[in-house]
Length: 62
Image 1: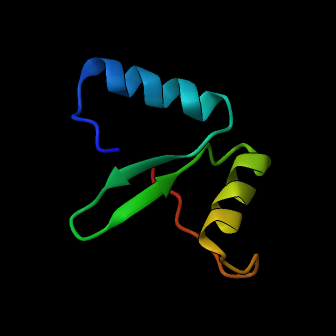
Image 2: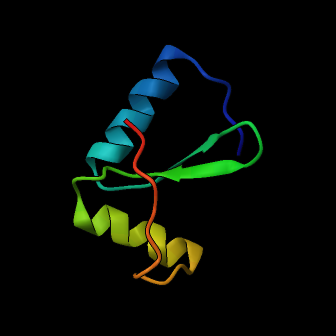
């Protein structure tokens, strides 16, 4: 589902991240997956969702 950005969608994404869930967001070329980088369980979900090896690092955007 594609959701148009609004103040409420940012609040919803914030709540999802605080709950340890993932959010998808568009970049210039592809969609990215976001998680709370301080939540090990949430970061693990990114690796599991993408089928990415644990030893293959991911980027943290601030």
